[in-house]
Image 1 (cartoon, rainbow, N blue to C red):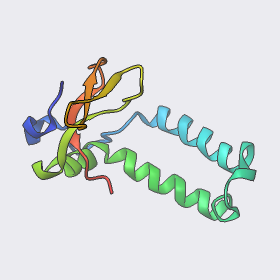
Image 2: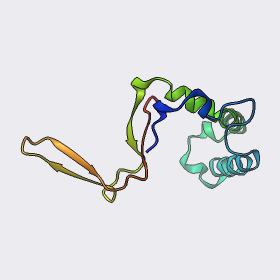
Image 3: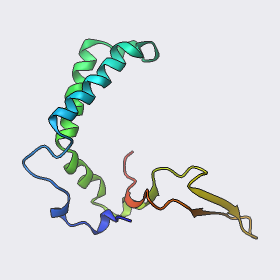
Image 4: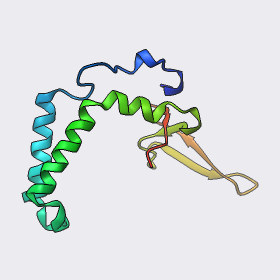
Length: 123
């Protein structure tokens, strides 16, 4: 599995270009997301996030995040003390748990496809 701690600075894809998804894909997704918040599911969101002003800010912020995707990923993974083993889907179909004789909880992994070491510093 990949280990972000071993990636050199030149391997993050940073540069003077959009390092996120393509502009065409981004525009389609941001349109879908804003229509969902403003219309389809408006009733489940606080009124403050369904206003045109908020949606404008939402689009601007996500656009900035998309353009600097590689730079953000590098920043989050730059300190080894924030990097740990993880798996994006440790549900019961991918892992198993048991308690040893000392009653300590142990875990075994069945699906290694989502395993990686990466930043846990997202807080």
